[in-house]
Length: 372
Image 1: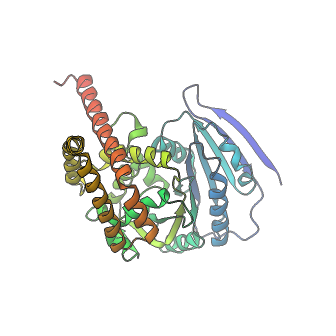
Image 2: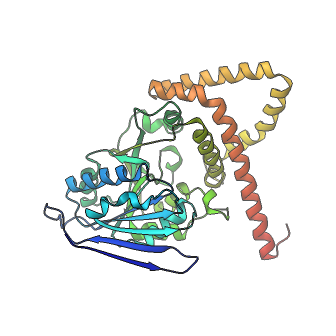
Image 3: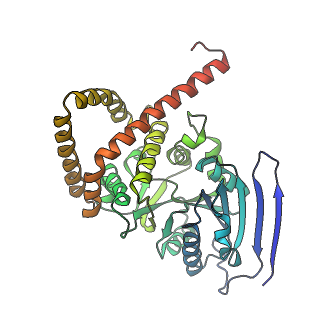
């Protein structure tokens, strides 16, 4: 086995790049009918999960006969040796590591797509494990002409109670899909009614690069941007986004309460950027929740006992509704138990999101000379 290693730099403020290439091909014959594939992974302090993520993906791609494959890791300012955790993966495939200051997932993905060379790009997060058979399913669908896919994502069954909270939320929000998981096509008309995201997503690389160029965020700090919704919506101008249980992964969600609270706060922030917009299904609920927050806070201070009773009743109601919607018992229990904690942190994130967006709008008006 012969490996080549090179380093380069784009300057003090740009990403530095290193490449590790393995000239030995895998043992099975190459499937010429499959397009070349670039796996783009944005990662921040992911040394604990990244190796397992990439190993599972390479194993499944090998079983599918996908030979022309490269992995592009974008190390987004990690301090835990994230890139070093892929030493073994570098012996199995072409690996490119792009290092940059912490800039958020969107800019990390964009940097990875620009560095990648494949016809297709598979966006994958560092906290997932692809379900065996998914790459075979994808290979078959790509060969038939369907090459834009959003993965079916589930939480690891053995995860802790806080981790299963998001299963409850997604079951309620996207109940028309989770009641009967099946192949569906996302369009402009039904986009807000089905689960989607860049946790595990594949499309022609050029389409994704074009979508990055049309990324319509209203914030200036892209770490607070909605890097899922706003990146996927432009793809609908070129066709549908496919979703089916055959292309799936398990997600290793944050399992501790402090990390759950931080994640909820962040999710509330990016919700505003992606969905508090004209035509969004969620705009009215967001506005109602923001307006009701101060009223609920005053009422809680004046009548704390009634506030506790209301929170208990609401939490139990959410848990029951989630179970009726089709969620597993553990997810319904998690949602019912953690709803008050989630509500406070998520609401605080939404307030931050509105303030960040207002600040960005004001700054743009000042820069353009418009009255503020």
